Image (tube, rainbow, N blue to C red; front, side, top):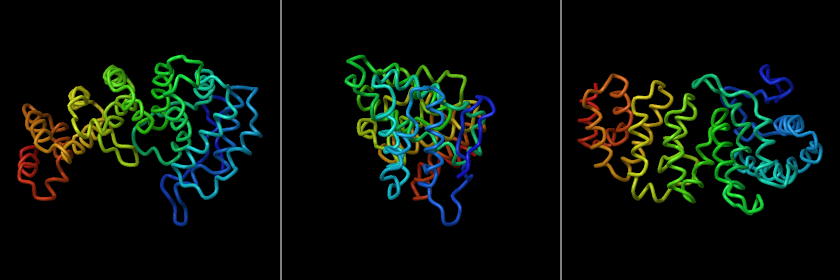
Length: 288
């Protein structure tokens, strides 16, 4: 892949990526040699002491057979070896190397996967105070994830924090339901989904999803479809394990529902409706 220079932050680069996987291509091609070169370039601009050449060698070594998720982890580990030793200092460099936030919520293409190594970095090193001389990493990690979700998505990296620190992480996400950026608001519901595809499940929320319900309530009438779709998918996850609870929530939300909320309800129960579940079919009919 060729690279493009960011126009908003002089000098920083992003790999040019296709809008969808082309014939003969794979997702892992998004984190190839050009992506490594862009990473080295951007990190060197943010931190002149960063050894881009040494990083490039570490990042390229063993990359070939890895799939996209493993490549993200591999590059995160390579960054850790070449960034400042302290976790907070390393994250400061990462944040200064970021290109501008996304200015839309649709037609994002595949270029956003450039930031998969960054979220893997936070998920891998942001939970253990041993990576920063005993300092609590929570605030640094939350700040990083808020910025990264505005460029890619921190839904994957947020989940280990929900497992390790459920109360404080949920409290922060509840605060973020009022964030002006729809990418941040979407993180609040997408990152807490009990059965998020491609990601680790959150066993506590699979067993009892009630701790996430205040987030869904706060975002059910969000002005952005990007966020409301995530609420619907989250509720659909709940319906897989607790259908009565999901149907009860949908029934309550039907009262004085706007057309946008009716769409959300229909989307949330579409899978059980396809399986012939009578209450799901009734809710979809009532939400027309």
